[in-house]
Image (tube, rainbow, N blue to C red):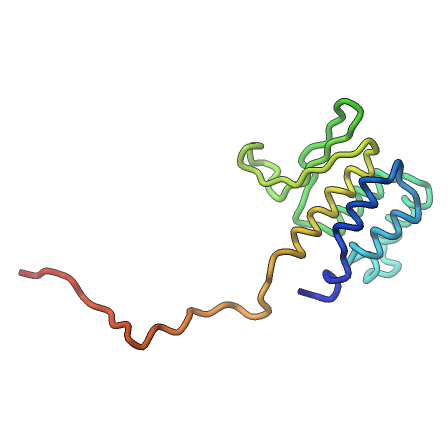
Length: 155
């Protein structure tokens, strides 16, 4: 696991998002600082500057969508729906699949930006849980007592 993913503390970030009544600048910057790997490394790149401009004008949903686009290039927004006072957001790697085949990550909140960012944090937590070897795996060494046997009947 990389050092950047160890710094991500999904339970506390997720808890902050669930309990927040609305998005604020300090909360958004905290999410970027703890869960964003590409925004700090871009420095003043155009995409990072765009996210910062959206934060400055408090366009929270647009900033969340731009952050998802930058940080999770393989993921797309599958669904955004408003039902009974809550926004439901689903992120997916395979948006064209039927719902029942897709393994989408879903989140909900009364604030749209917080619902989007909750799904973002869930995806980050999933990525942190998946072990990735630094070298390709090789076949295990066979048991020394193992001998292949031909069982063909040519008779």
